[in-house]
Image 1: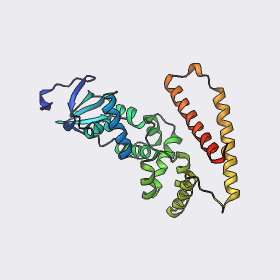
Image 2: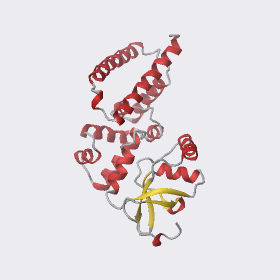
Image 3: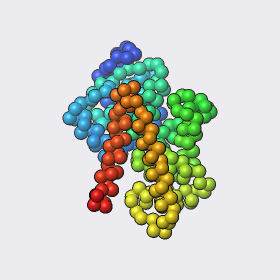
Image 4: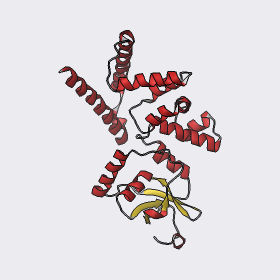
Length: 257
C-alpha cells in the first residue's frame, strides 16, 4: 500500500497493510514489551504466520493500530513487509479495551496505568470506570491504589506477572515509600524462596493463612458445574491447575517427595 488516499477503507474489512505505514496506539495499556516475549512471538509468526489480524483505524491521514500492537511490532522485527489488518471506524476505545485491557498477560501495574489514563482523559469517577471496564468498584479502586507505589517498584512490576495484585495493594497501603520498599523486598525474597529466619512466627502465620485460603478455593472448585462452563472458562481452569501442579512438583523436588 503506497498511497493511503487511494484506499476507501470499509469497517470490518481485512486489508494487507504495509507495516511501515502504521503508527502505534498511544493509549495501549502495554507500554513495555520484554525482549524475550518479543523474540518468542517473532519465532511463532515466522513458523505459523498471523493467527488473528490486528485492527487499525484512520486518524487524519495516518493509519494507527487499535489492537494487536505486539503482533505488528513482531512483523517488523521479523522483516515482514505487510500485515493482515482489519479496519475499524467505530467503538474504537471499546475494541481496544476488549483486546488489550482484558488480556490476561497484562500486569496489574499496566492495568492500573491504563485505568489512570482513562480516568484522566474522560474524568471518570470510580463507578464510571468500573462500568466501562466491566469490573467491580473495589477491583478498580485496588488497581488505582498502585499509583502510590514508588517508581522503582512500579518499574519492577511493569513487565512481570509474578507479582500478585492483592500483595501489591497491601504494600501500596503503607504510608511511606521506604516502608513500601522494605515490604516489597520481603515479597521478592518470598517469591525467590528465601528463608525468613528472623521471623519464624510470622512466616508460620502466613503459611497457615495460605492453607486456609486453599481449603476455601478447593471447596469452591468442587461446587463448579463444568457442564455450564464455556471453552474459555475451561482453558483458564486447566491453566490454574497446571500452576498448582508446578508448585507441587517444585516442593517434591526440593524435599525429595
